[in-house]
Length: 144
Image (cartoon, rainbow, N blue to C red; front, top):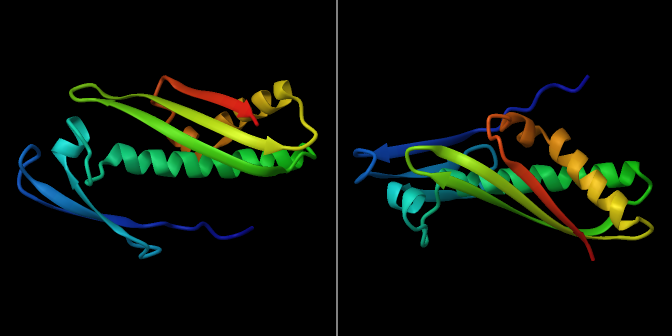
């Protein structure tokens, strides 16, 4: 059995929640670091990211990988998949919903089967499973 992989990120923060700011870094890959602050989270992002945007990136990536594999296992490997994840955050409430929107080019599959597998991929995606506390995770799947 393969050994577990641990991925790491870190955040440095200065000040309080509302006036402070920080930096989040992708430690495992060293691919990037991102400025973060409350305003980007609760008001407007601009050029600063927030936890929900980072979560959306993780979710869209994981979901697309899961969906791609399930389509291949179905005998209909995708030519192209494009997924966005919209994570809704309400200050004082938390993350209230996630909408995954996927468009795909897949030869030899019906629209009905594409949508069915897309929904199954949402349930099997490890990030979706980790986000089980979010009551409203939906998928909008379109076959191009």
